[in-house]
Length: 148
Image (cartoon, rainbow, N blue to C red):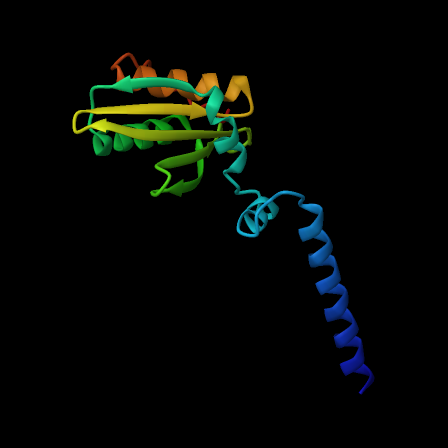
């Protein structure tokens, strides 16, 4: 019987800790809190989208998306989230540099796609944008793995 009470107390303590974490999250939404807690939230990328580096390319959305995905793979960026509804790929600059960078796609028409590269870090945003934009323009140098 003592063991049962101990489990009950431990469960109540766990509930208290989780509630405290939820309240401490401030203005985070209920759906964003678990993502932020796990380190996979894209909210900061969406919030910094107003300062994104933007460029339009003469490629359809699917071709552009596939080319960006291939470029990210070649450069060693770590993709931690994809959202088809928001047309977003969220990456860390590398497996060792966990600077978050968001790549948003906007389909202008069947043959043109706009890409917005967003990040709270100027370095992360510029590094990823330059590599992606150069690759889409055919100016890509020998791929350098940024994770080293």
